[in-house]
Length: 411
Image (cartoon, rainbow, N blue to C red):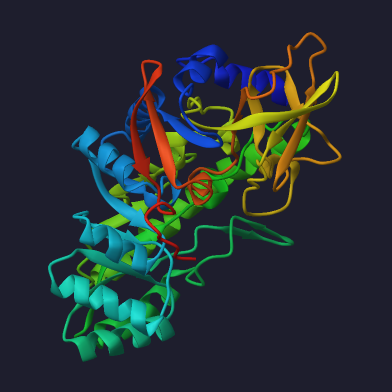
C-alpha cells in the first residue's frame, strides 16, 4: 500500500469533504487550525476500547488545549487525570481546576519545583517524575524547605537494548530491578518525598509505525522486534513493581502505554492505567500502523495566494515541521482538495508553501481558496496557532485557546 493509498483510506473516515470544511471556514481568517469534534470523539471511543478495562490518562502534550483536555476528561468516567510534560504546565493546569497531574519528564529547576510545592500545599495533586538519585535529592531538598511532601513516579526504561541497536528511546537509566531499588532507597530516606507511581513507556511500540510505504523489509523487522519486545518489557515492569512493593513503596498507580501500544499494554497485569493522547487528533504519524484506524480530527488551512504556473499554486505559510529525527514524514501533508503534493525542491516553507498536482486530473484551488493540511505530530500544531476552531456538523461551534493562545511556553 502506498502512502497515498494509506492517507486516502484515513481520509475516508472524515465526516466532511473539501467543500464541507471550506464552507465551515467561510467567515474565518486564514491560516486556521481546526478540530472536527465528531472525529475527535470517535477517536476517543477507539482509545477507550483499546484500553480495555483500564483507566485512560490523557497526554496533555498531544492536545495542548485546556478546553479539549476538559472535554476528553468529561467524556467518559474512565478518562482520569492528565500526563503533563512540564512542571509549570502542571501548575497552570492545576490553577484551572485540573486534578491528578503526572509530570512525565524530570526536571530539577528550583523555581519550578517550588511552584509545584506551592500548588501541592494548596491542594493540587501533582506527581513528579524521577529516574536517578540526584533528581530525588534536589527535589526532596526543595520540598523539605517548603514543608510539603511531594509524590514521585519512577520512570523505568522499556527499551530493548540489542548489540548495535537500541530498540526504543533514550529516556530513563533505570533498566533493571537493582537500579529501581537504588532510586527508591534515596526516596525512602527523605520525609519530603514519597514514591507513589511507576511509569514504563514502551516507545518502540507506541510511537513506531510498522506499515510504512516503501520499506517492506524494515516493516517486517519492526513487527518482529515489537513482538519480541513486549514480553521482555512486561516482565521488567512487573519485576520492578513487585520489588518496589516488597521494599515498602506505597505505589498508587503503574502507568504504561501510548496511542500505538494500548492493545499490548492493557494485557500487562502490572499496569493499572494507560496513557494516550495523539490518537485524539490522529496526525499523519499514525497513518502507517498495521492495526490502527484513527480518523484525522485535526487539520490546518492555508490560503492560496499565488498561481506561479498552470500546474501549481502557492499557499501562505505552512512550514510546520514535526520534531524528532529528520525525515520526509515530518512534513505536513496537503489533503483537501485531493490530488495535491508539496513541491519537492521547496517543501513546506516558513512564509510560503508551493503545491503541485500529483494527480494530473486534480483541479487546482483558486486564489483565496483554502488548502487543508494534516500535520505529523499531534500537539505540536498548537504551538503554531493561538486558537482552534471546533467544527461539528459542518459548522464552527466554538473557538478555544491553545497553550500558545494562553501565552504558555514551557520548553
